[in-house]
Image 1: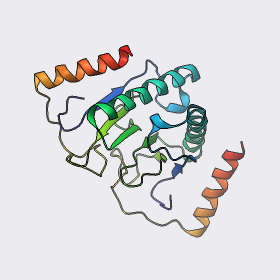
Image 2: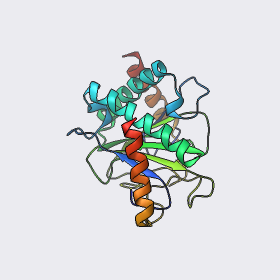
Image 3: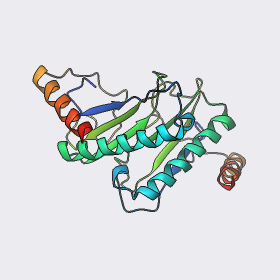
Length: 108
Length: 108
């Protein structure tokens, strides 16, 4: 997500299912491995106090999993971030750095 | 959860891990099967438009997964429910009915 307030990832599986319980079991298994691996990397990389993981999908039906690194000094701690603050666009260097980090995690 | 505004379940795995990515893989696999099975039952039972599933844990460190049935006419739709409205206690018959439903789903 293009939001400098949090390091916030979305995992979007290739599926027409909109609910976790309708996912093909093999895809669900793969997706959870990706989601938890990204959460682990994100926690280490950002020294987060907590990773928030959620499938909400009330606004956008395409199934997507939020993975968000939370910190005591982020704008909403300890409240959830959804619907809280308007996004604050990343600078170009920050965006490049985040993309590079995520690509290296996926490469692992 | 004792909240008449939503049919809202918490799954609490027996673990000292506080992050999904730190769960023992066999426990994680079992937990996701329980969470998705409960989500499927909850969606059918309540005729929900969407199931919201989340591991947040900013307030309570014990790992827990929220599973919430959402409806277009619930007090927060389409916003997330966390931190939104104060809970509205269930009546005793409603609580009994919910417990009975959940116990039957777990029995299946």
